[in-house]
Length: 459
Image 1: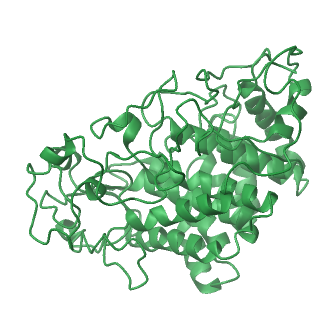
Image 2: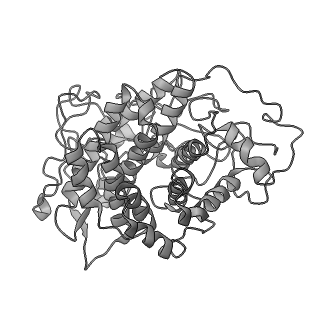
Image 3: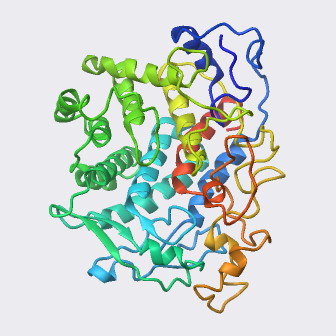
């Protein structure tokens, strides 16, 4: 077996999956390294149930619109109540995807897809958290239904990013333009259309039993797909052979066998490979046999010492793709590994994100004894409405943003961008690359945490 980094690849990597594939991928034998004499742990090193609870709670802190009485992050209040008025449509609701006050449809749809996939694969293990996860999904899908209410049109953004980023103010106070961006036949946007279709199709599976009428509404709205990721989810949600035919005819053209092994909100090729591999592995859909090979190639690309390895790691063992919000690739890769292992009926774990790292700190806010205190997030960093009822003006907030004081409002469950390639994390509010949380970082981790909590008897 190869000499793997000490905390290989992700916050929740499956050791036995690595063991399974190390020989399959022709990994070189190791004489040293933390996995060369690894024994399967009998006890969990982390409270994955607590982390799961907090990872879902985070989404309540990102809500836009009229907040419900059940709102648990109580320092947040109503915001964006006139969103959509610029185009005479109702676009109230949804999520602010990160630390600013803009609603971006592309990452919001990806967040919805990944939350839904987490529930589809692992919802049966979530117990009391399942309802909260479904509420997080429905908060997004209710908004996406509004954004797709007009035929052949998707409203994909609310807010002016440039003007929003020039202010540091609470979402409850925002007075920057709430301009609306849409795609239609004259201004197409195939990728965001496909992601929206994937989100609605995936969510329709989540609600198929608990709310069949809502599920049907989501599925009907989803059937406007264009690309492989959307087609993969529509195939799973509808079992319509049209989508299987589309995948067979267009999969290669749409990147099914490309060597790019990045999975995030703006690149879904790896996710599509894993999703479609299930149809072959579990349902024996023979025309999708090649997707297992493509998925295997992705796994091999992560394993050091193999001829196919392309992954880079920090000295502490964290998968490192890029400086900006690297943790999104950690969490999304974790989810794909856990999910693929489930399809192969094999599993186990290790952990970096929750504190087993050279910094000895958790990168999830509110988890563990040491975690980021100055995250790049307007609502968290400024005094809450209850603590400071009067309006905080656009530029006034930058005094707080540039200070060293801890954020007064704990955005429980938020996962930040994470350390640099040398495992360093300065915990500076101005450093959006490392200190900004995002919904698309959290969403893939929900399923992985549910799996780990269940595996160690915590759920």
